[in-house]
Length: 207
Ligand code: MLT
Image (cartoon, rainbow, N blue to C red; front, side, top):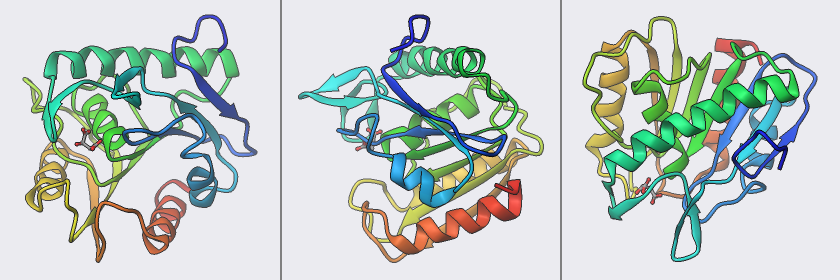
């Protein structure tokens, strides 16, 4: 861990100016999202932190009281801490802080959405696999021109069916350009949605 960076992480330098912030799901680690990141973008740098909360030994990015019941205070604090980590990492590794794309799965997608809704960091875009609405911000966010790709599973056993739509609406009402894409899948990711995410990224952010 580089000394002023408070998350255990991996950084892989790419050939393009974009950086993917890779946010793993519950039980993930710094390595879990690296190949997914490379599949989505061949040239972006990859920044992959490990969540600091342990739930039965499994890393997460924030605490929860039960499935889908989040500790909102903890979520807010950790969203701020993670946003701060990304800022500092951009200085340490000298990547463009205006060209960071959040790529999260499940718990990682939820903290990514929380950072966006609380406007703690301005991502160039976000790819959220299997997200829920993590919290409702006190103030309406201003997300003008932010592009967001949400990939939801029609048979997801963890994320209730209405949640991806609610999140898409919340982000869209705040000005983001949201693409909501449904897979015939459970909570598990499919090859086809990774390809869709890669195409979306290329079309929307040229990476
Ligand atoms: C969460 O806790 O963020 C969601 O329930 C997804 C997950 O199981 O990690």
